[in-house]
Image 1 (cartoon, rainbow, N blue to C red):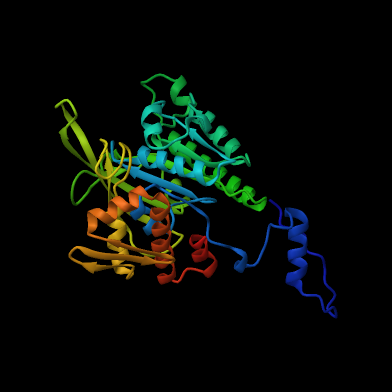
Image 2 (cartoon, rainbow, N blue to C red):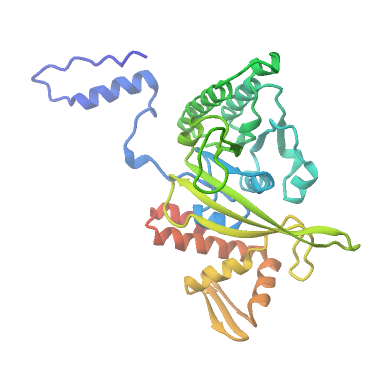
Amino acid sequence: MARPKKTAVPEDSDANELEQTLKEVRKRFGDTSVSSGSTIVQPERVSTGSFVLDFQTLGGIPRGRATMIVGERHSGKTTIACKVTASAQRQYPDEAVALVDAEGTFDAVWAAKLGVDLDRLVLFQPETGEAAVDVIDAFIGTREVSMVIVDSVAALTPMAEIESSAEDAHVGLQARLVGGMIRKATAGMIRERRRGHNIGLLFLNQYRSKIGGFAKFGEPKTIPGGRALEFATSLQIVMKNKENTGKDEIGNDAVTVNDHSFQITKNKMNSGGRTGEFRLLRQDDDDLGLKEGDIDDAGTMLAYAKKFGAYTGGGSSWALEFWSHELKFKGLEHAKRALYADRSLYWDLRNFLIASQAEALGMPEYFVERFLV
């Protein structure tokens, strides 16, 4: 692309050359194409449904940026994506979430248990990787879409691979496809930001064995799609899962809880912690008032509340005091049940803790104030 032509400035003119350059750039690319660095603000976040993951990212998955969640099978990638979908539907009720289901394995029953409003979910199952790329770009450019989720990058298959013989080699085809997709998506998000549309882009990806590679410990692994995706994302999360088994209501062996752990391997939004764990229920817990698919993280929230001086006491006498809330509890279990029984209180405590962490990390005042509403 040719550089903008610069109007000649007479030597005796008081006009600033930078002002003239900016004028020409805005004339060609639009008034919002260039701005002062002070106008760049922290992106809005969409809750992941997990308090500790929200805490470490100061709110969740960003809008206006790209995020990638990576993990082995059953690590919790799709579960978190469904939790993010449900949160986006609640936070932005006038906007839809678009899911590009490249694997063709969307589980509507499990998604509903995780809180997804299926009637407000736009689902596209592409036959080729090229179709997926075109539709992703179309969704990014649609103002009524708040989030685009791709499940998964590893399943994006180039048309040339589909139409050719299984004997043919296709070295680098998918990497080129994904590289083109992320460049197109990045340009699209920048274009949308200029018209006030901040859309979140969430990629799910899987590990593959690295042929001929070397790892000091364990099996050498790689991520499908090349390196472009890793460079273009602002947030990268590696998920792990440990399934705990027990008995169901009729005595059969069943998974009772999933203990998920995560590591944030890239975060271009904020500093702070990079690891955490949370427990996802696979059966109802009547004592706590939780359902299958809920995350039991009230205990974690209270532990962090201790660190910030909001939860104090000992023995059978504890107090939770923050903002306008002053509550007394007989112990941890009593406090947990109270938080789950009053979701408004739960959400206020979540916001208080994230705001306190954001302030401790030196985040801008306007960002901290987002959690004080």
